[in-house]
Length: 337
Image (cartoon, rainbow, N blue to C red):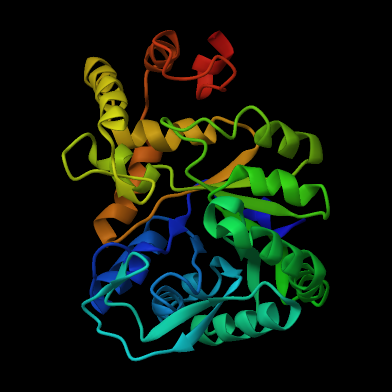
């Protein structure tokens, strides 16, 4: 069985403990990871990019301290190499504040992938990882350089990932991206075990529903859904500082959130509970991975996923055009729709 098939329904998004958008202390990160383990969250997703090694380093140090942690499932990523720099810790770089003193260099080639994997294992204090993902391929990320990096991956990085899987150093391989289109494009060339897609199948963004998820169903490829809160707006709600997909939420987005919030109030539903549960209603999505920054958030995520939500709430979202007709609804609501 592929490592991806063994994932729990709820995972731990490691960008937050890499100081995404705000610094958190070593002790807070440590407590967040321990809190997740106590809440039976045993899958952790991280990447060299998250805090320029900070997330992996913190995760590896904490997981190594407990039996449960040592048995946890980990996904990390390749495609960016870290190079030492002299950096002002207070300056935000690529969205991370107080990150480790490295900068990034894109490399999806054979040697770059092997080097990235080796460095990640050192930070994670492991000799293998369960899932290895090529990180942030895609035209939206790379613009005019996309074709160059994509060819680099197909000609070299993919072969390195397959070799690592064949050697048993990796349990499964795939992509970890924000763009569903690159997943479809990649499957025209190679086979993959799993995708981690961030933010493209949520209460606010259903763009993966029409083409990507049906293709994954046809090819029997499981999907991990990252970013279920779309960077925070589906957790914090429509307050003025809300983020949507790594930037300040637009008034159009906030207006849509306010309509969803009104239905949440009518039915007594917590917005973040709805956000988590909606994503997992699709049968191809096997795990949802919110960013978790402290012990309370980790344990709250477990409770939010288990919170009962009335079937009528989901039908009301669909009736008001907030969910596509083709989107599976959670539980009995889907069977009754």
